[in-house]
Length: 133
Length: 157
Image (cartoon, rainbow over all chains, first blue to last red; front, side):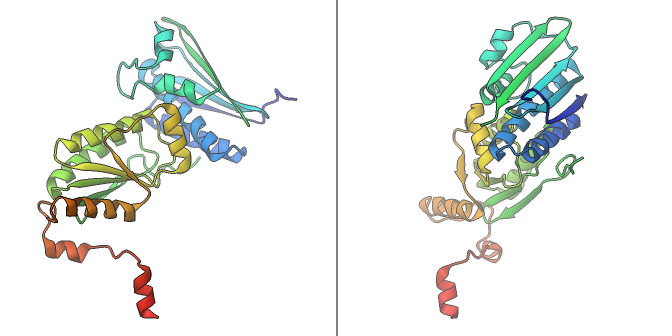
């Protein structure tokens, strides 16, 4: 049953402390599920980057971390303003506030699969997947 | 829920020889990070520190905002004549930072506090053996950390 979740946690993000709590919990869960510390670290950083995005641009949203047998999936959803130019965000160097302009593009590099679905005025869903080796 | 030791917590900033030793806590919010940077700059001015040592040994998650904090602190401290050393980066953090695409130009990196002290002392000797501005020689001797040496042990046997 490759698609049966082994563990799933949901984080509601509406402020900066929520972001810190979510990435800490993400690190703990990933470590407890037996991921290598470096892989668990990447999961935590991606949760942090996506959480910051939600907090800064949408105000609130939800991140779901699901651990499967062969991969880890992170889904970040919000009903914020949406991303007008997804390609530019994925290419990196696009920053409207703080960060190194690496938030999204860097997260994409840390993961094996990364997709953004965004509708201006409706919201954004980001799905990121890391295969376990 | 895990204990968050950094949220709202004050960071430890201490003077050690010509180093400003900054023990960076984990779990800092972006707001805490900006507050820490201001605290570092204030202390560089107060102690006339030639070196800022950012000790990252407690930090186990370093995202792009944190990376920007390191970069910007180094640039700002540089405008005060101070150089930044980072120490204690964990293996997992290093792997993530590099794969994330983070670059830290003009920043010295060492494994631990001993190496940071060695680097700052060596650099100051090259600069003419003068103590850092504002550091009184007597006081710096008293504050000096004794680094364990095999020769000390041999002489005691």
